Structure formats: structure tokens, C-alpha cells
Length: 138
Image (cartoon, rainbow, N blue to C red; front, side, top):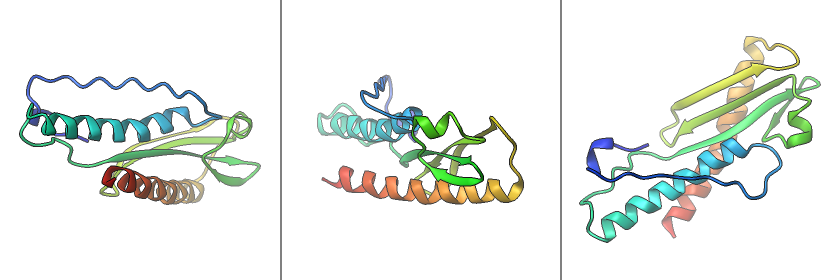
């Protein structure tokens, strides 16, 4: 997300406590942390601590899965524990993958399902990326 060499000796620590969630806490933390990091660097620039923000892109994440043969986006806990396939996908604002982690927990999946899950995740991430853009523009 950032160019490590553009902010010198500063350390940015992001602690994500998801206070209320029903599944998808890791992906929610990634998506929210991106906004927090962006804001932190914006503040450092405004305060004159660094000349330019090192933020090069945003990241967002979603979970997807297969339950009873049906593909799901952003499963809640009750669905997640029943999922045959559970996958987390993290993408950059450039539409590139940061991470794709999928597990056949109570079943397996084929290439066709993998492609459809990645497409579903990409669409969900596009929605989150639009929300990030709106929030960061305010």
C-alpha cells in the first residue's frame, strides 16, 4: 500500500479491534485499516513531518464462500461455520491481487468455482473501494 522509503524513520502501527462483527473480521480490519493508514499519512503531511504521502494505492478485502453449492459474499458467522469453501481475497485499488487464500473446509472446489468466487470477491471489493474513495474524499 505504501512506499516504505518515503516516510523515513516513522513507524505506523495500526491496531484493529473489530468491536461488533458477525464474521469477516479479518477482511473488515484490512479494509478499515487502509483508511486509517491513509489518514495517518495525510496528517503527517499536513503537520509538515513528511513532504509527501507514501500511499500508492488502497487495499480492501472480502470473504467469499460456498454453502450447499451456492456462492456467498461476506458470510456471517452462521454461514461461515457451514461453508464448504471459505476464501479471503485482498485486492489493491489498481485491481491487482494482494492475497487470495482459499480453503476447502468441508469440501473441495474446482477451477470453475474458484473463478466464480474470485469474480464475486472482485465485485464486492469494488463496492468497498468506492466507499473508501468517498470517505477519503470527505
